[in-house]
Each structure stands twice: as C-alpha cells, then as structure tokens.
Amino acid sequence: MLCVIAVLTVATSYLSFRVQRLRGMLEGEPIVLVEHGRVIERNLCRERMTHDELAAEAPPAADRRSRPRAPGVLETNGRMSFILED
Image 1 (cartoon, rainbow, N blue to C red):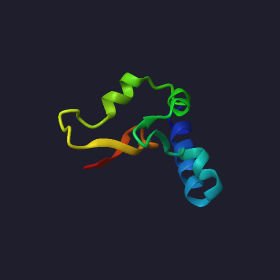
Image 2 (cartoon, helix red, strand yellow; image 1 turned 90 degrees about the vertical axis):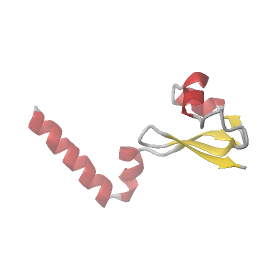
Image 3 (spheres, rainbow, N blue to C red; image 1 turned 180 degrees about the horizontal axis):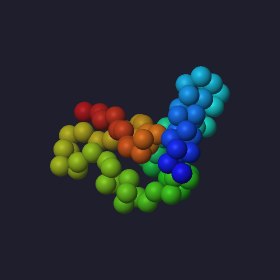
Image 4 (tube, rainbow, N blue to C red; image 1 turned 90 degrees about the horizontal axis):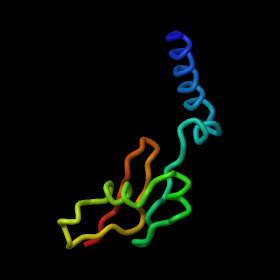
C-alpha cells in the first residue's frame, strides 16, 4: 500500500512538471477571498470557510495604521496572503 502511494505521488509530481495543462488541476489555483477590503462571499462559500476563519488568518488588528486590501488570497498550500496598505 505504501508503494502505491509513493508511486502515485511521484507520478502526479512528474505529470504536473511535464504537462502544463494538468498543473492547474493537480496543484490547484489561488483563490481571491478579499478584494478592495470586501469579502467575496461566493469564493468563501466555495472554499467552505467561515468569516471567523478568515478573520483568524487576517493580519493582527493591533496594527490599526494598515488594513487589508485587495487581494486577500487563499494560496494552494492553504495559507492566506494579504497585501497591506499604509
């Protein structure tokens, strides 16, 4: 069983490296969840995230001089990226 998983992992890695059309399907695409300071509800529902989970990933609220703006992106590795404006 372990050998099957190892072979599948190597095969998908090789295919995503060699075949560009399959890369998006195998690795996923980043998804914009916050744009211009507003939450995109459709994308949030599609990713099955709550507003509380999104708030937990947002930059600390202690720094009031900067606020999240477009985009707030859910990366393919599961982490959120925000661009901050002064």
